[in-house]
Image (tube, rainbow, N blue to C red):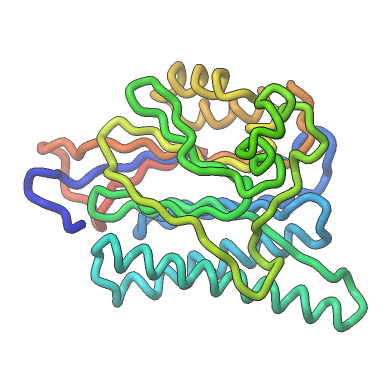
Amino acid sequence: MPNTASSPALTLEIAAKTDPGVLRTLNEDSIATDTELGLLVLSDGMGGYQCGNVASSIATQVIVEGLALGLKDTLHHTSAVAALIENVVKRANRAIYLEGTQRAESGQEKTMGSTLALLLFQNNHVTMAHVGDSRIYRLREQHLELMTHDHSLLQEQIDQGLLSAEDAATSHNRHLVTRGLGLQAEVEVALSECEAVPGDLYLLCSDGLNDMVDNADIERVLNSLQANLPLAASQLVMIANDNGGEDNISVILAKTGTQASSAPKKHGFFAWLFGR
């Protein structure tokens, strides 16, 4: 939807952190942000597949470059933006699939794959794209809500009533995804959108976080440290590592606000503050 005079442009404060974890030396996660576009992208090279770091890097690069070009020529209505995102994500899927096919033909590993969690802030709305088991959460009025639905064998078993949430926490099938970038020539992208409200705090994370830290503790950290996003990101990674750090851990935090009327006008749609 187009922005209106009654909906002032939002500011966005972001912080991001990625870590290999305790048990792994190679970080197969890839994260990217674009300050002018209002774009946040997280991709996890899936465990059990070779060259996951290559797949995740291809995903973030193709998506950021594709949206940077596409948004210049796209009317910023929700439907047009969602269609563009879907097209670019499918382009990334084909690039990863082609790379995997070429490697297989040369006698290397046959399969490459990656997950995706993506947010694009446009006209005071958020468009979300999701593939696999990386997640998007939103903290609103101190309540943490999961905005995505895992594409995984484990989630399917829970949905069908075959497995309880308690049993799922210790299942050996936690990392078996049913959908991912690069696994097939085509991919179905889960898309949704919602209004961005001042004070919202969004979290994108790879499963190295939510496998090690339960939602109640994530909510507690975000509520306690949302005034210091870099510290919040570091604290989440530290807790995941303290709890075992079995996988790579990546988090991107994005908090919305309103531009003070007395503040100087910033270039672009958002005023961005980076914490490292």
